[in-house]
Length: 390
Image (cartoon, rainbow, N blue to C red; front, side):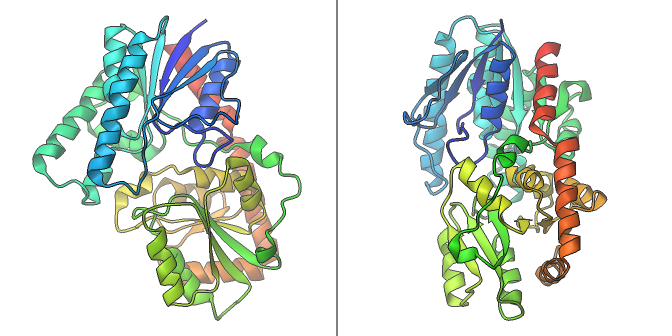
């Protein structure tokens, strides 16, 4: 029986909100007869059963929030890395070290543990760092950039296998000199079972008889949610039955709320983050799923956000405001559309609302795509093949 040491600073389960990819992977490993110990920075909520045969969670209790200052976040990364390294070195009978970013710094304890214990490392790249913060202007010190790029290559070169979440990420690593046979693409997964459990989705009373366009997830700079407000502004008089539901947290949330108030965008509704099972009901009861980024930055096209795959699993048409691999996919399978300009997305939403047959057809195409290409079963199978390979 193999034992996997799994490092993920922001690990979440289905009982909590946000992405649950690591939870799905870890439980899948256990189902295959492996033992898994997860080292997370997240606090473990004792109300939920986070421990089962073969799966153990250990928390470093590292406090972290996107609302923290830059230096406070750096201290959080250091805190987690030191505690994870100590715990990892104390963990006995490890066969494989598995680490998932972000942050990129999680690779430091992962590489050190794999070297000192002489075990192979699988490193999962969820965002290509430091490229993203450099392109967005968050990091501009040339010495720090050089250091972070050297750290990135050191992690890649000391990994036996690397998992990336999109074709764009794969190409990025190839251009950095990483060999193709070392890289596997496993996109984020559509948790079909989670949405199948929602047999009769129920709309909130405030949303009944409304045409709901939903955006669940982080409300930060890179998410470009001002674009959604631009779309809402164009539709608030044209069709009062169309509403935009924004669910989640982030450092731009209050600014967005202020703009909604100032512009009297009565067709925009904010809700706080919800547990995974609750958000599944809300998504499935919506009419259209919207994903957007600050589309001035081309590198953000390589993202593989959970909500894209949630929309597919729920059978929603998917509207995005950027190009890249997701534009290619949704337009190839006719389950969505990419509109770079807010006025064009507003027209698309109107067209879909006025054409229920097209809306239904797109939704069915989304679900078929989820089942045939992005199901959780297929993603777990790819991971198992990597584990067997090494």
